[in-house]
Length: 80
Image (tube, rainbow, N blue to C red):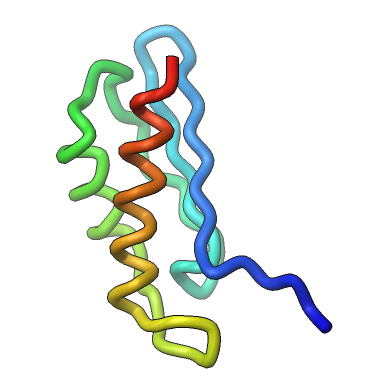
């Protein structure tokens, strides 16, 4: 079998800059433009949803991928 990710999100804070990368939600991985490290989760989620173009496939729906991107971003931003 295969082990394929439904969606992935990586988040890095460096000083005053926040970088977000998203996989399995567009034809290629997406790197968001730099955001302020203090940006609220809602703003980061809006920027992410504008940048991705998820599809429906046998693994899950487009809506589920969009939902999980938001969940992962909020969880990652909550970590210290």
